[in-house]
Image (cartoon, rainbow, N blue to C red):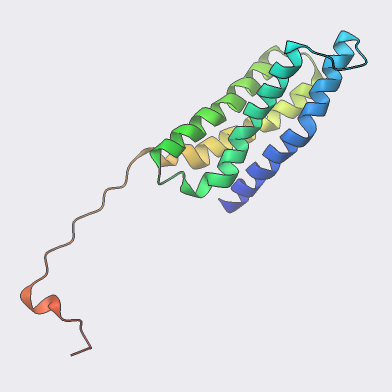
Length: 144
């Protein structure tokens, strides 16, 4: 599990480092603009990149606590649903091979993170009650 968490953190950091220049350069190349002045498309692309990376970073940072807290599991499920759905959307509708080669492994890793951290912890653990102590059990054995 620690290796999955470390890999999730590294992938989230790599997405934040390399995806914005890639998105901005393709947006500029598609529009034919030498500068990145204004544009709602660029801010939407940057927001989507942050949402995409946040699921990986959250699992990387708080993965060890996901089994204990239902709110953190819900947050992880919501944050991981964005990479799952967006990767699936790109795989189904994109015709650019570079995007397909990037989104395929990210979809597989998102599924692996969801299956490893969110899915198994959906049940709650119930502790059994301890039996009542008898009268003679109050003393610690070996100390009398």
